[in-house]
Length: 160
Image (cartoon, rainbow, N blue to C red):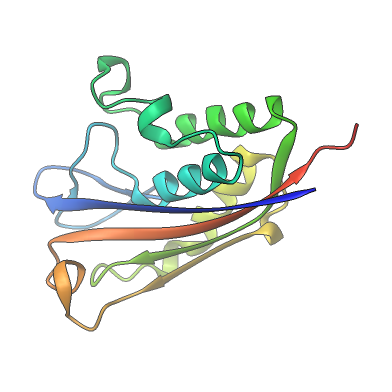
């Protein structure tokens, strides 16, 4: 049995914060503003996984009103989401994600992002796709005001 989910996240860029995407600390002049580490890529991935199984979203599981999650490492949150999915009887079949950012260039970091997601989800890196694109200087991402990400997750039932 297969289940498919879609996830989306966006965060504003601001000075004085680290830029963390896919669990990778990326050198940049600005970082993403959020209650946790604001990793839009992992947030979109988690929402896709949870959505595929009709388990809500990360706001339900890790509310930004809970101080426990202030500054949280999103790789640890993804680890918990993968556990929740396994407890429900599912695992990652594959994930396809796209990060939308005018800057910085993300190509040098894609492999590390894919490896982080695969490791935490307990699957082979060949099941994880991460891409990056710009919006040709259009919109809030094109104007370097924020970064967004979309993800689609195919969740497969664990064998009995």
